[in-house]
Length: 284
Image (tube, rainbow, N blue to C red; front, side, top):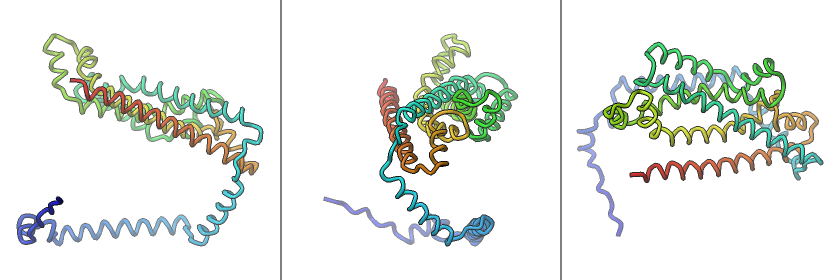
C-alpha cells in the first residue's frame, strides 16, 4: 500500500522559510541582473560570431549529403594500415597517460597541504600545473613536433605534458581529502613522513588515482586521434587525408573504428574501476 507524504502547510513554510517563498527585493534584483547579463552576453556573442539560421539550415543539408556519401563504410583496401594506425593511437594514449600519472604522483604530494615541502614549494607546483593545464593538448603537440619532429613520440610527449597539469591538481585534491587518522596511527608508531605517505595516505587515495587515470586513458584515446591530424602519429593522419580527398566512405570506416575502440576501452576501464574500488570498499 502506497502512503502519501503529508503536504507541507503553507503558513508553516512561510513562517519558517520566508527567504524561499518571499525573496527580498535585493535578491530578486540580483537574480534579474544576472539573468539579463547572461542573455545579453549570449546575444552579443551570436551577433559577433555572425550566427545565422539560414547558414545553419544550409549546413544541415550539406551534412545530410555527406552522411549519404558515408554509406556504406569502406576501408578502400587500406584496412591493415588503418588498424595499424589505430593501434598506434591507443599506444600513444596509453604511454602518455601512464607517464603523466607516474610524474604527477610525487607532484601531487608536493602540491597537497600538510604533506612535504613548504608553502613556497606548494605554491610553485600548483601554479606550474595551472600553467601546463592551461595549454591544450593540440598546442602541446604542435610544440613537441617542432622539438622532436613528426611521429608518435611527439604525440606521447604532448599527452604526457598536458595530463601532468591535470593529474597534479586531481591527485593533490584527493590527497588533501584523505582521513588523517591513518597517518596519525603511522606517526604514533614512530613512522617518518615517507612512511606516513606510503602507509597512511597512499592506500586511501590509490582507488581514486586509478579511477582518474583510467578515465583519462579513455579520453586521451580521442585526443590522440586529434593530435594525429597535425602530424603526431596515429589514425588521425589517415583521417585527415581521406577527408582531404573526399573519400567519405573511408571516413565513416575510420570513425566507426575509433568509436568501437573507445567503447571497448570504456567497458574495460569501468569494469576495472568497479572491481578495484569495490574490493577496497569491502575491506574491513
